[in-house]
Image (cartoon, rainbow, N blue to C red; front, side, top):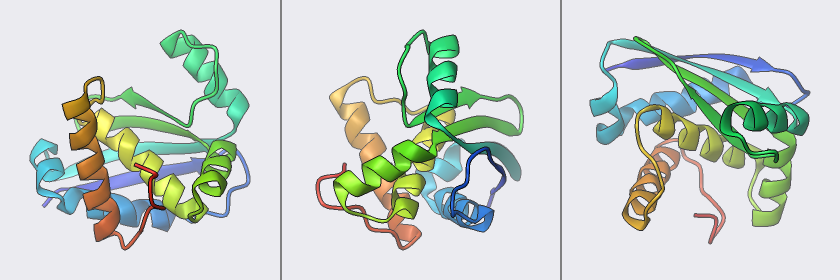
Length: 151
């Protein structure tokens, strides 16, 4: 089984332990469809937890969208799957709106980003359903429950 190693950096104060991110990624690698897309025994991903300002800048510079988003994925190469940037203030707002813990929202976002790094997208309804199914499968393995209606 492939191990996904994560380098976690925090540019803002966020009460999240890097071990939490690594644990959810371990569960992601256990989902058969995810495991099938991991091409080596060791894969890496970088997760940056940052603020709205940085996400807005990254979104503008790399996606041409001048707005804040919750997560951005940047593809890597070889064994480095890529980099994820996540807005902690957006995590807090979305967790409050949906009524589940911030850690659950964070896990949702970095699983979503990981799926993008592995080639999944959500441009069509069938793609959205598949990403939702896979996200739920990972979160369930990690013992996390999304608020009703979140996905």
